[in-house]
Each structure stands twice: as C-alpha cells, then as structure tokens.
Image 1: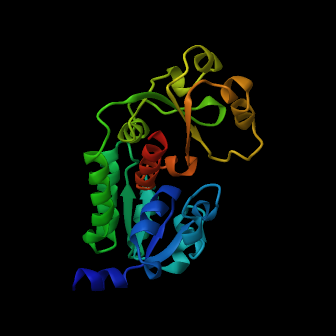
Image 2: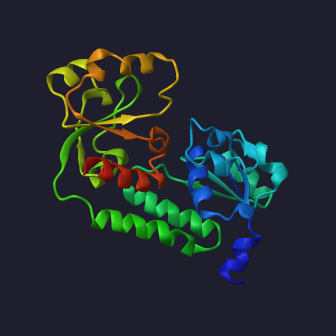
Length: 247
C-alpha cells in the first residue's frame, strides 16, 4: 500500500500536551482521533485553535477507546499497562522520549511522521531546523531565560541549546533559579522573559513584578512560554522570532 494511502487510513490519538504538538503539526485533520485537553487551552498551547477541532482527552487510554485509534502517542513512558492494553485492542503505542536536545526534536518528528505512515511529513520541519542551525550566530550574548518566580533553564539542556541557536548563551545558575541579587548586581546582557500565564495572579507573577525585575538593566526580549514547555518543534519559530528581536 502506498504511504499516502496508509496515512489516510490511520487514526491517531495523543495523550500528552507534548505529543499533541507533533501530531497537530504533522497530521491531517481527519487523521487526528483525539488530543489532550491541555492543548485546547489558550494559556497552555499556541496550537489551541487547531486542537479545539478535535475530541479532547485527559491523558488516559480509557479516554480515547471510543475513538478507536490505530496509533496512540505518549511521551516519557506511557506505562507498561497502557502498551499491553492497547496491544490487545489492536492499537499501536508510540512512546516519544522527552526532548533533551535539539537532535531529539528532529528524531521525534521522524518518529511521528513514521507513525502516520508517511515519513516525508517530517521533511519540511527538519529542513527548517537544518536551516536554523546553518544560520546560527557565530558569537553569543550572555543571557538569562526568566520564568515565573525566577525559574530559568538548565545548562546543558534542550532549552539552552535552543537559545544558542538564537545567539544567546544561557547563564548557568544554581538550582536553575534567578535571584534578585543576580539581576541587581550581575544582570545579563539579554533577559528573555517568558509570557507563560503572565496575566495570572500567583506568587510567581508577583515575583516578576518586583522593582528589581522590572528595572533590570538588560536588553529585554519576550518568549512565548507555552512553546518552551515541551521544547519541541514550535521552538523553531520562537528562535526565528528571538533572532529578529535581537537585531
């Protein structure tokens, strides 16, 4: 059977926000049996408009049984029981490893395209990633990615790799936290500010509103924190946008 015909016959469900991202970017609408409810939340996913066109689930195999998918996508170990039950019902479970590096993202694109029965589906995204790497800045600027309550990115990590593609060297910080003292005494050249749930009232949001944070002497650029949750292919667009902000 040709790959295109096989792909058209498949029905795929995703049980996780991070696998939703790959499925929504690579699958045709009629191939999507279900996505997690989180991807339908505008505060959690930039793809929420696409996601709302599909049946939601709460992350369990039981939630998608009625849709009778051929393939179920999970991430980071969906559980041995899930694979066993799915197998007995004639479903294939594809468990994606968490993206610990940019290479992992490329590999996961290939895995999901293969699961859809059409490996060529990954080509456009992989080509875009290849171009992003080929045009990476040669010099790097000291920077700190800043999230709610002073959270930041580990070094090394997939997140710090993505920042390097934008020309920013993420500063290694103890406990992956940014202190007010650091921002006051040793501010970075670039502060990458996550907008994840920025309008939500929380202790983390209050911390970000501290005068030291508001007045830090650094070039400030914004990041769509929703895209950084899974460190997946949506960060290709984020890096492109960060580069534009830094010009």
